[in-house]
Length: 281
Image (cartoon, rainbow, N blue to C red; front, side, top):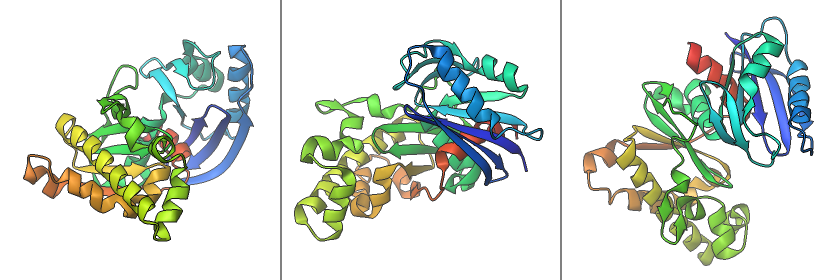
């Protein structure tokens, strides 16, 4: 039962929680300061973490929506926090709190969180695929997050596809770009029997199936764990997804592939905490 702090650093809010085992014990939140002074954001983060820190905490994990040199904990760029460029966040926080700090991007945190707390427990080899406002992924190999240089492994959403990239067709952006509506609204219409909405999810499933075939060719996982807002509508596109995946040339691979959706609440916080747990266990 490790006691760890998980931090979800978003573009508008920062949230920290003390996690004991798989239970969130205490949490704190703070709006990300709208400032061009990097130190003001760092100071707000330190104060937020301090609210949930106690003497039994073994380490801190932080998920950020941006590029990180994970071994040194340097944040290069983060969405909606323009003042943060080349911030040595690991060094700053370790000096402040005197515990190990691990930092990674939010997609990798999702995958590690699934491995430690979710359906990924049963797989030592899987891809955690977030289908929300964007398309991101984390890769688990031999039970651990796949090492990389800048937290960029698994950015399948940026691979060119049709007249754009996969993210344009395999995230909530698809419904906004093609149908001028949010995915949640489209799901409600489909559930009410609207034929156009049902067909929209069939098309979406085909696109996501193409993305998953690319994942099969590149990292060959045992399973895909889906998360993000669009994954909540999985039943609406599951058949179309599998219809496309089954065109993969190696039948043995697709016959043994498993696709599941997350059931972990507060996966952003728990996934960040899992960075420490998965690295040290």
